[in-house]
Amino acid sequence: DAGVTQSPTHLIKTRGQQVTLRCSPKSGHDTVSWYQQALGQGPQFIFQYYEEEERQRGNFPDRFSGHQFPNYSSELNVNALLLGDSALYLCASSSTGGTSYEQYFGPGTRLTVT
Amino acid sequence: GQSLEQPSEVTAVEGAIVQINCTYQTSGFYGLSWYQQHDGGAPTFLSYNALDGLEETGRFSSFLSRSDSYGYLLLQELQMKDSASYFCAVDSNYQLIWGAGTKLIIKP
Image (cartoon, rainbow over all chains, first blue to last red; front, side):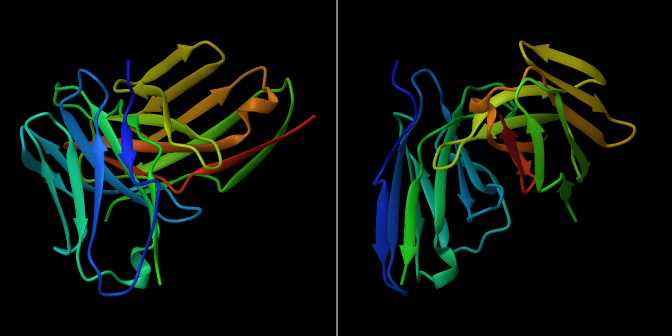
């Protein structure tokens, strides 16, 4: 039973560039949430996708956008990268049910913006 | 605003019991979750409380008081492998709102 997978594991970008991160949910899960985790901090909710729609969004600018595909996999896109976007980006999946309390996390993508 | 407060660091001895507290202030609340994260690893789900009271899962227990906006995670029979960061997170309208985490240091 495959867990949540993310790619790439590490990424180095330059300010102003654009980046796309990918996530495949755990088998049987249809809901994907994305988080940004700065060093020494708790994860910050970016958005959640369900049925290919953004169901909820956290306090992140429009530079952060996403997509969910019919097979439930998801992408996170960040445009016009800033130095402050350097962080660990976590993808989490869960099953339908309306609650988000039990989520399964992928290993994350470490993004460094120089 | 929305906020969760938990101690930044707790130190305990192997075999002992430790309690990690969490107070929260959020606009919506369905329940309180606890996650464990080892250095360099992904968060893993530990427990969830939607109603007041104690939930027990093996060596870990979690408590919630909705009227006090307060919860705690209790870890018993501490083992060295329990050294990690522990996060409380509020389940609120399709999102998890996280605390900054408590680093648990265990001494032999």
